[in-house]
Image (cartoon, rainbow, N blue to C red; front, side, top):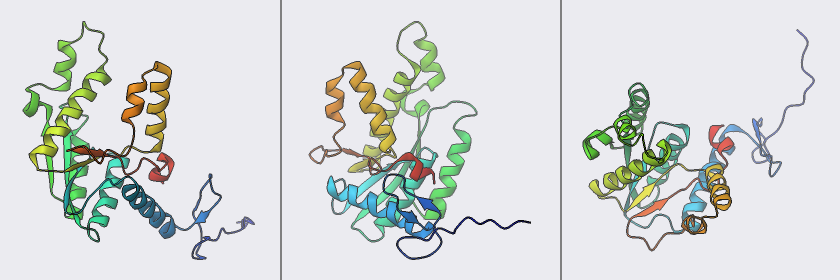
Length: 221
């Protein structure tokens, strides 16, 4: 077998073999340094926007996707060295064959981390599933995404209040923020653009996005 002549990349921080190159900075990082950099950037974002205060309880909304699972792991790691507590909450929309696997993933992951976890279903909260809600509004112009988004936000708010949380943390990343900004710009909805400010420290029940300055591709990696 012919050996590759491609030079081995060296981490710019520790001189180990690099596995990732940041396109926006050109920095080459090994696996450990890359992970540490994401944790530090998340912590810096939380600090900059005063997202979490001393002795607060953070409800981490975990769907079972990559963003929310990564956020839970990082927030849980930070909680061991900072003065705040966390609990995980998951919303079950009641869609057959869609949420079951994700719920199992979340429950297993929370168990491995030792994080208290609770699931709230549309059926329990609203006495209907998402499918039923869509059936009831099939003749209206409201989109399925709009209906689900409204129900999900209400369910997350209820869950956070039910466990006595001070803060709700979601896994929205920088790509999500940019997409939302562009959509609001194109639709001319300037009010919603104002709602995107990461600093909502004056709200009684704050909603935070610790990944709002981290690209999706880095969370995936």
